[in-house]
Image (cartoon, rainbow, N blue to C red; front, side, top):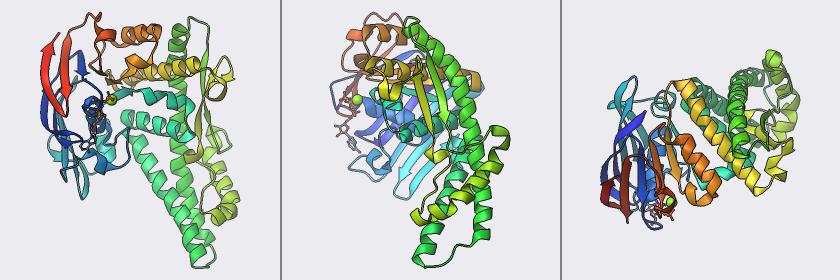
Length: 370
Ligand SMILES: Nc1ncnc2c1ncn2[C@@H]1O[C@H](COP(=O)(O)OP(=O)(O)OP(=O)(O)O)[C@@H](O)[C@H]1O
Ligand SMILES: [Mg+2]
């Protein structure tokens, strides 16, 4: 899979730009704060309709404008197509081949990307919500049904919590029958989300373990597991889930929350059986994060039949020499890659064809084929 052309209109600090890419490596080179990450972000947003840096859509639109447009021409093995995301004051619109997509789950997955960024360390070190977001983003790209189930789940979850709040404010008693039905649906979609996450983690951990072992010179063994709040085995998950929701109902009603379910669950990292998020060294944490990301490349290939597009934001400067070499060996030549950097130092020995884009103050002032 690759991007042939990318167009940005009033996105971040770009007013108007159109780029033709190399099939292999594309380097965005420039000083700090010129717009290198903004370019990578635009590709990420085209794939996922959301930014990895902000939840505020408004921030993506140029300060001087009201609307922003991103468009790209994509080649896949199955054919060529165009995609488009537009941010307006009325919200977000997505198009595939100029046809508006009503459902997010029909749009996401058209283009698959994996982003490597300094913030990846947060997948290991950060709060559980970072890891849930990681799982949700990656699974949604590979599996539109997952995104659909997740969105249904989130809608029902909101409904339950809001209902508790409203009944409290109106000083009304809970309608237990209404909640029985709501919780049954909640458990049904929650179960689908949990099972899909577990299956994904199981597959991811096989690849990640291998990568981690290689990077660490066979000294470390990485294990991933899913921390479930709904206590039951998969075959009886729904029934037990419903039961446990009922048991927590009165407590939840007082707090306007839902104390069990995928929105409270977590992905756990262990290195040599040590809980690495808490007790690992910085190096072990970095290797774990990198291993999981690298593992995704092959996992996505397995799921979708094609390698995803890779976005590398400033990662070279973050990694020591050994990990840099490993990263580049693992990816180069496989798939189209976009790299941001302030210097060509780390990249000068690369022997791959590609293109360098010189970025300055929201403009591409020069480009060079290498
Ligand atoms: N909505 C916006 N409208 C206009 N300019 C914006 C907007 N959002 C961000 N910017 C500008 O974009 C610039 C930052 O761009 P970006 O994050 O891509 O920098 P960078 O080249 O990756 O820098 P670094 O090397 O420090 O990571 C800043 O100058 C910021 O003011
Ligand atoms: Mg940057």
